Length: 116
Image (tube, rainbow, N blue to C red; front, side, top):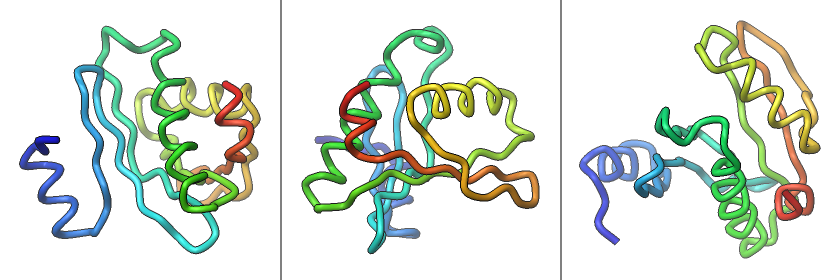
């Protein structure tokens, strides 16, 4: 798979993995307790569709392969799409576990993510 310069940079500077396709990209890292979703970006023309499920399914499969029980992420409430992202995760089984400094941290079980 060809990676963009951005993906190369993220891999080199942070050690994270970036997966890109025509719809957008996601970035993740593996932690001891879960797969940490660093970023998800979906192009405007794909937003509001069920395309987000594709990314969540892929992330859940990666977590499952590493025997990790959950996905964890953070949403900054100052982001323009923060409300829609939070609504998505809470609607489909995500659980908020911390709100601090304009950030809302949540987790979702791999099982819930695989059942989207």
